[in-house]
Length: 445
Image 1 (cartoon, one colour):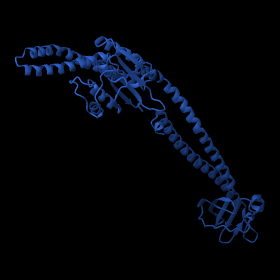
Image 2 (tube, helix red, strand yellow):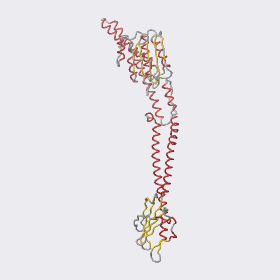
Image 3 (cartoon, one colour):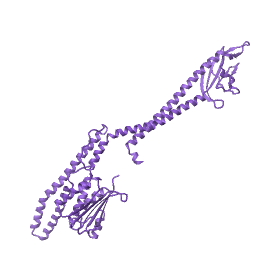
Image 4 (cartoon, helix red, strand yellow):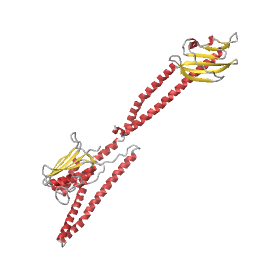
């Protein structure tokens, strides 16, 4: 569910759904109000026509009283509970339709020209629309009460509105499916960009595509510029470190000469120790620069492609009489290439310098039994004593790199890289007698 909430497609579909629900609710409200108003006006107009007809058939009888000419009355008023009703009253006369039977409606006296319209419950299940109006006939004030049953009309209106609601309800999934297809086609134009980035992470040198939607063109341009600037910055930094290490060689040679020529043997020995420490640090930085090679920001580490390159460098700048046994997975490790080059390079360099005849490298991808990436390097050298092994296993601790004992050189850098990925660095005695260093890294989420 959390992954869906982070999906752009899911957010767009949710916003469209809410928008459609709001629009359809508004449309249903407008339809309901409009249809109710139209039907009410239609019935009121019909009742007004009936009122004019009733007024027309109201006349004086021979005795001077009031009577209704039944020949002018609609037959619906003669049938009991027919749904059409009237009541006509004045101070001297009172008339009612036979359809009312024994029902006595409540009538409010209206002045001449006054008219009122209301909806009320009628006889049984009937629902009435009632019109009352006042008029003067031959100097006498009459109030006419007219009612028509609209229950069936209301049921038809509700059925129509329900059908409209069902239609709207069925159209929402159809619109969402249509939107999904439109989004899929739109996002398909980003697929070349994703493939290019995946190829670059796998170690290939590719250019980002230029044919991208206008909406993401600024993002692509920013990524391209960022990768270019990051690569240049890493190149300049490594070049500066390499140049600095080369520049330090001459002062170090002078320091060695001063140590050899110093008249005081004790101070000369101290200068020689300082020279050796600085010389090792310079050599370490030069090895790192050679191992890392050309920087590739954003690229992933492919063991089968990168490890042979590291081995060739170690054979060229170090020993060439060692046998390397490597177990490497297919494909890329989902970690930064430069970090993995420095990590693997330093571990192999450390084992290379202390091994007697053989170095072993094993890289294993996550499996059902072990969800972590594991990278183990071991040698058949003299190894590390138990007390030093315990020190190496402690967080932030390492053997003095200048002591020449064990396998401490470069492990501090390896520890920093591993900790940046929230991984673990473990030290053990190798079966061949040397040191085994294992790195455990969790795949990125």
